Length: 285
Image 1: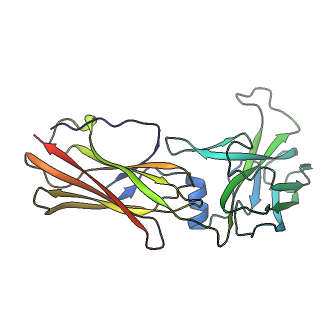
Image 2: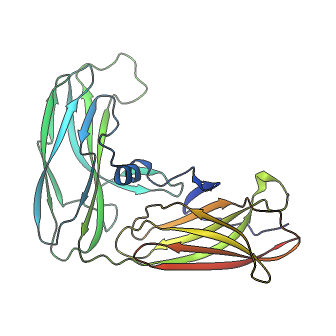
Image 3: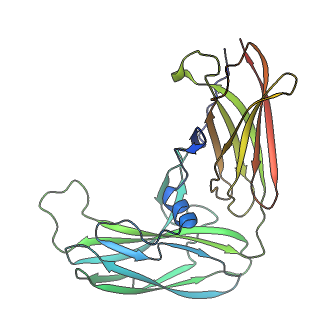
């Protein structure tokens, strides 16, 4: 059996037996879909940890963030803005402000931006968001709350800074344009699993070409040369930001395939009844 190799620096999502084992932006997706109430830090909690804003263009709004020093030391908290992005491994990382067109940089202001808290002490932060005229679609960014203890440890492998993150998304209601397309569907030989028949990954490359995030779901199908379905497996919903690509990868776990030609189908439903699909031929020898 032989399949062409597929490479490329895209986001990759791995599924095994229908269960997601690698996800895009785990904290963000969990917070949006599961309603997480806190952010992870050894010394701080901040709530809400996720802001899903729906403000119209040309408007301004002030919100309150609640910060608590949950550690055993007093320290200084410094609040700064950062962008966040998804790398080709599907991991979320904080990056410098104004790194892309849909950044919230310049839209947000916090007061106070620097303050001190004793153990157990609390602080309210005023967050003001101003959406400029002409804004459309979804924008995103983050607030990073850096905690510096007053007494630094004698030995440290890091810079002594702990912190918490508030993940933000802002969508201008009524301006969302949901668009997407399948760029490639392909069967890729799974080398670690050897040369057994059926040892391949079904892969699908999807791009979010709209101006707002989408949460697509869908399935793969394998059919024989007559069109008879032999295998079908769904993949779970995954949040994809505007302008980003994702490669969805699912190991084939259907019946052994006899030598011959087959069709691999990939179908994606990305909301509002919108579906796109792709297909490719592959051979078993």
